[in-house]
Image 1 (tube, one colour):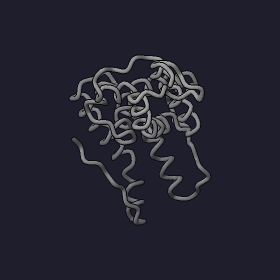
Image 2: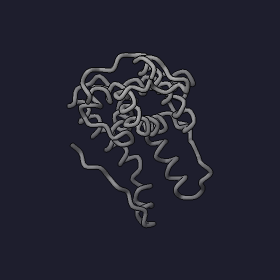
Image 3: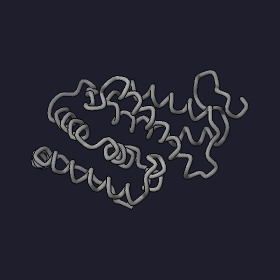
Length: 184
């Protein structure tokens, strides 16, 4: 077993119980969050790998709840850097998996609506809805207060409702169900 902080040959986090647990717990959520943020699944997987490489090179925060927020802060920073570097911050590029029809159209409309949100509002929304972080974890990852998270999340949800009102009504008429989450 490698010493803590040493990368294993496949580029994943070192095989310590805490690092392995953190990787197993967070990796799918990090990929999902980054996919929504950057708009490309392959890029998101690369950024997720880079996230865990950065995490492996740094000492883990002491508190267990803070560890997850810390990983998402790394992922968020890498994702924002990627968007800035590729000049895609203003628009989110579609990642179409060969699908066609109404579902694909809805996906594009949702991505366009997300791209219209203020960057921090979009990040907070995606950290909550795509990654499933708690308000406290989002506050830590984005360096804002929990009250700011609640306020920005509410603002983002209202903006998305307005932007997607026609789309949601059309999809509901077709019998598509949208599921929501209970807020904390």
